[in-house]
Image (cartoon, rainbow over all chains, first blue to last red; front, side, top):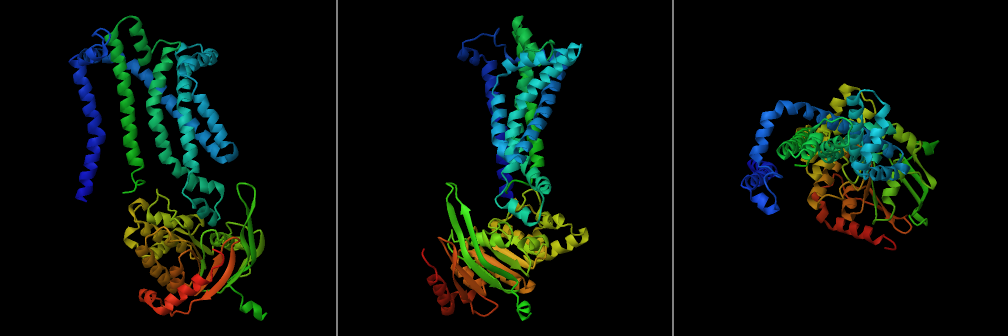
Length: 270
Length: 260
C-alpha cells in the first residue's frame, strides 16, 4: 500500500513536475534574454515575459470579451464536432461494409487546411443573418467543428468495434439483439476512445478557433487580436493574446485530464 | 418409447463443418462427428489446435451452424435451447466488462434475461460464494488476477442456472498452479450443482483429471478418433495425478491421436 502510494506520488511528480520545471527553465532563459541571443531576435519582436504579464494584468477586463468570443467558438465547435464525429463513428460501426472507407474520406476531409476552408465557409453563412456577429460566429464554429470531427469519428469507430474477443459471442449466447449489445457493450467500450479523441481535439479546438478568427468577417477574438496587433506593430499586446490563447488551451486540457481520471478511474488495471 | 427414456441430453449426430478460408478454398473443420452425452456427465473434447473442438462447442451452443448433421439437446435444437437459457458458456478469456464491478458483471446475463431484481441479488451472492469471491464483489476486473477473473467468468455462467455448462479452453491462459486449483474448483462446483459439462481443452492430463469420458479429436480433417472412458474414482484429488493409473490413462489418450 505504502509502496503503491509513493509510486503514484512519483507519477504525479513526473507528469506535473517535469512540465512545470521545463516551463520555469524557459521562463528564466526568456527573462534573462538568453532566448533572444539563441534565436537572434530582440525585445521588440519577442517582449520579455514580465512585460507581457503586466499588459495582461492591466488590460484583463478589456480582454475578457475577446476571450469569451474565442471560448464560445472553441467550445461550440468542440461539442458539435465531437458529436458529429461520434455519430459518424456509430454509422461506420453499424454499416460495417462502408465504415472504414467512409472514415478514410472523413480523415481526408480533415486534411484540407483551415486556411482554405475558412473563406469557403464564410461564403456559406453570408446569407444566414443580417447581423455580422451571428453569421461570423456560426462560420467560425463550423470551421472548428470540421477541425474536431475526424479524430472523434475514427476513435469512436474503433471504440465501438474493437471489443474484447468473444464478447460478441457472449452477448449472442444471451440471445441479445444488436441494440442491447450496442448499449451494454459497444457504447461503454468506446468511452476511453472518446477521451483519446478529446486529447487531440481539445487543444485543436483552441487553435482552430484562433485561426478561424483570422479569416472571419467580424473583428473579434483572441486570435484576431493577435493578428491586428502584429499588423499595428504592437508586439507586446500581440504576445499577451498569444499567452492567453496558450493558457486557454492548457487549462482546457488540464480540465479534460481531471475529468478523464475521474470517469475512467476503475478501468485501469492496478 | 424405451429409446426416449434413455435419450441423451446432448446428441451430436454426423456433424460436419466446412469453412471457406481467406483464399476461397474449402476447409473441412469437422467430419462426421457423433457423440451422445448423458445428463450430468463431464465430457472433455480434447485435441490439438485445428482439430475442430472449439468449432464443435460453438455448434452445440448455437454460435455456429453445421454444414451438415444435427445437434439435439433434450430433443430440441441448439437455438431453442439457447433461447431457453439453458447454456452457461465460459470462454478462453474471462470476457469481463471492465467498467462493471464483479457483481455487475455477473448481473449482466440476468439483466438481459429480465430476472426479477430480488432474485438477481440472491443468485449473485450464491454464485460468488460458489467460486469463493464473496469478498471481491465490488472489485473491478482490472483489480483481479487472471485466475480470479476466470472465476468471475464461471460465476457469471452459473448465475443463469444453466442445465449445461460449456467451457471453451477456460484455463488455457492461466499458469499451471492456478489451472490445477481451478480444476479442483470446477469439479467441486460440478459435484454440487450436478450440471452436464462439455469441456474443451488441449491439455491431456487436465482432461483425464476432470472427465468421465474424453472425446479425442484429431485434425485435418477434424474428426472423432477415440472415446476414452476415465474410470478413476470420484471425487478426484490432486494426489491422483501421481498414480500409475493416471499415467496409464494419459498414455492411452496420447496414443489415440491420429495423424499429428
